Image (cartoon, rainbow, N blue to C red; front, side, top):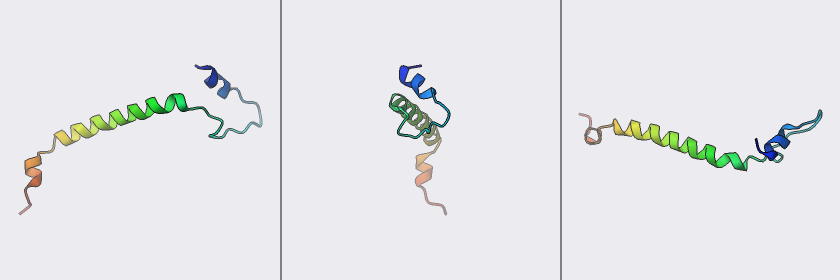
Length: 60
């Protein structure tokens, strides 16, 4: 745990926690990147299963 994270966890009774007090900048980018990669993999697998030539043909 970093020093900032350790400081964030030290609360006294009556302390108010707001989003402004939390320092999440070290965590936001990796979480966003991991989420984007997971969505990309799932979407790519789903799109690979679609036959594009059949999808362009009209239903008669």
